[in-house]
Length: 324
Image (tube, rainbow, N blue to C red):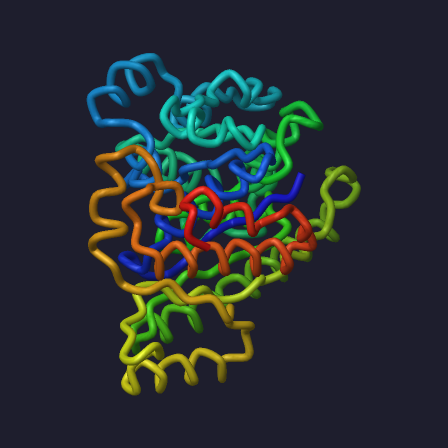
């Protein structure tokens, strides 16, 4: 089971769009995919459930990641994560022809309360490696994923909050890879640089604590998450190429020393604006324009190569639309 955290240091960069489309496309190819929504805005959750259904069937029934975190009692094993996982019906129907599976661990609009509780358990925002609850906090999500059946999922995609707080760090501690969505603009470039710096410092700190507390926590392994690269979203094209203004920022991102995906996703209100209402990501919608579908197919193919899982017949994505 490969675990990928999708993280950014800036909102509005297409993080949820990226998560939903990659996950759904890979499920449609016949793989078992779990989406984890750790963003309190819950946009990923609302991409698959209407708000009224979320409220009645998930939030009121305590089937969200917030409820799972809150059900954890100190000095005990966490409750099995599987009991909080749901299957969005429309997406399940769409991926069924390929024999895949798409599940979701839904978010909650009050998930920020969990962030505050975990920060308090650490002893405050500045109390890092000195706290005795360090691994109790940062290993929670990893422990929860480990409670799933070993063969339940091929891929887990974690939609992180747009900052590097405790919940995002817990996602990093649970993942094998990190994927960074960004827009080709100045603020996104600064956000990528800041995110990479935060990531490096946290991994160093975590591994240092693991060394210092190896006697108390021999089960804790060293972190070594690999940055898959930056995916550029909301790209504006002119005559088949990103505009000259955007190409300058694309070059600046490449100069940061992080890989940049060759596949880019264009800005398209027609493709993405109505996807939440349809409860079906753009890659599976028959109304999505040809160019956007082609870019999403290329992105999924490149993503699979980068995580070492190519050869899944990604060309079949285009056949769903009868055009590619």
